[in-house]
Image (cartoon, rainbow, N blue to C red):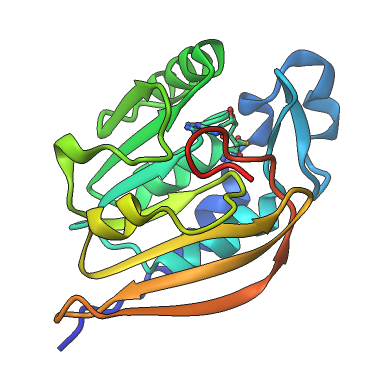
Length: 198
Ligand code: SAH
């Protein structure tokens, strides 16, 4: 039988308690409670909180999960992943953002996160396979490397489509390695830079 996560209540409680100000620069802390994406520098954004929650819930995390995250950004989504998974491998291409996220998450006490600075569009093969994969920047298509690095019974959530408007897609890999895709609705993310950009 598939292991189902029953953490939704706990995830929601944690999400409500997690102070978004920690992940924002001083000038934007005052907007922390607004359910919107906000600038974090370098033309990047911290995602809309309700969408971060939705994507986290779609992953159906459990404490045995090894998670790959592409687009560390502020580290806000990373905190939710680290709280409910065993290990998180997170990649960010902008060095300063990665370092700041690392400082924040270390200060919060997380010891189960591995950070990498670089292009994550081809995943992180060294530690594959991952039980869960989340991409927080919009890709032109689903990166084949990420499908390959997804474990059997794995789930991946990512925005796919045009610049400025993407479809959030849930990709599931069954025990035989078959892939199923399910659209979850329209979203707007900053572009994934690299091999799978638009
Ligand atoms: N979850 C983050 C979202 C940040 S926005 C948050 O809520 O703060 C998306 C991030 O993806 C940006 O920081 C951007 O620099 C990063 N990014 C874009 N393309 C990337 C790539 N190919 N590899 C790694 N990170 C990438």
